[in-house]
Image 1: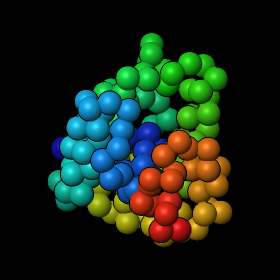
Image 2: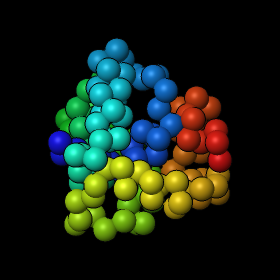
Image 3: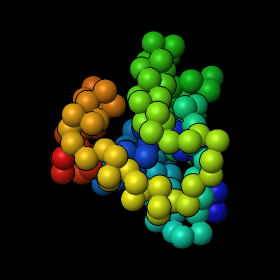
Image 4: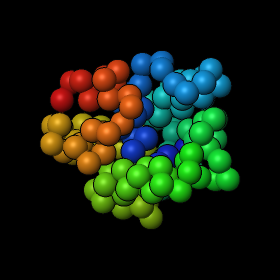
Length: 128
């Protein structure tokens, strides 16, 4: 299986525990979270709408909510993507193992997670 994921969604998937913007979004996120754990799954990285965004009720004209919010989201993606080769396709379990070693303190995710509306529920953020 091939997944396309935004940079910041790598962290979101690590902390996901069933919350979401809508029932459809939560179901899609749950399925992607299962797929990312499979050795047969590869991931291509992006800073544009991805396989998670396709079920988001806030996706509007291929943009997250509005121009201002979208630029914040792209900035979060880019902070994560600085640490990876975006021209490469990654084995999903290996990629997500790297996340733990790269983003291992609250300081390391400050620019990515601090303004996120989900950071109080996020298991990834809470363990930092």
